[in-house]
Length: 309
Image (cartoon, rainbow, N blue to C red; front, side, top):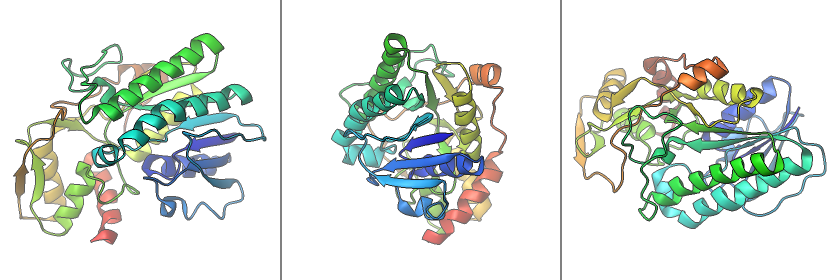
């Protein structure tokens, strides 16, 4: 098949690109590199069934050759990015999704939209199931990302209902692995690089807030399974193994043998206190669940982050 990946030079998109290429598909990455990195796809560029278009999907793009599938992953995805790029984040959620859906309509292509656990906001329901509507502050600093994704989900569903577009929505929970940007403010690169430098790991608040970490190869399997399914979603994709941020930091420090401990800082506004996916739908419908243990995945991530220290 001929497959478009918007945001394909980003962390998750680059892994998805390589996997789809290895499966024999033609892959076209569209990315404006505002947060993506050409180095993530450098080894893919010479491959005959791979092409890269540097373009902002918030603006129209017309491709003449037939497209079979579209994975719409384009968006800033870390707090540092969407706080620095609030308008661009809102635009790619709205106009970028409109562009991708228009392309899907013209080519009669299936579209998968990468949504996020952030649509649940600071949840009042735990663990988070797909029928929970969320607890989001629309005018808070994180609202530009949360509401962009919520709006994008609404648009995707409207195109499915009104135009009959074959669409799928996945809500991605914390994912980690190689190709993450080393200084994007997310906890995995911050902890790995801090520990490799033998520095105290930065913990915001008391460290009791929880997250659930899914290794990127597991997530990519889930994305492809969702695209291959007949289910429109939304479906949660993530690892249901929940832990506190401090517990996660202790694992990182133990693996790297960092004895510097922790440094506590003020908790950011609207930072979610709990995060754990209910993946019952993914298990039942997609026959999918994560397989990579946190220690195994972190070893791979640590090897990658060593180059930045």
